[in-house]
Image (tube, rainbow, N blue to C red; front, side, top):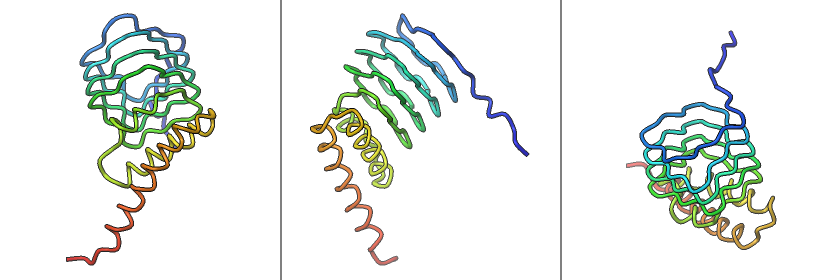
Length: 153
């Protein structure tokens, strides 16, 4: 009835060189460290980053679907062309430009992404970023409700 999820736990690891075309699917990274590392076309789907320290890293065309960022530091990171569907953030330092480049396309996913970041920014006391996130959250909610109210054709 209950099976092992197959999630591999990687504790106290460090990326110290560029990473490209790799797959790290369904991993639990505890205390992962990377400083000024470029990640290109890396699949991090369904990973958990717990107490990760990823400063000034660049993520290009990475898949971060379903990722959870908990008690982590992503300050100075750039995310270009990354997929954040179903990603969540909890007590994580992350620059608010992620709202400009990381929001998923469908309004229901954009709503959840912005809400998670709004709550995250509130937890860490970043009112300016929380306000930016709530603007996106409200617009996504309006778009979603408007589409739901259209008659079926």
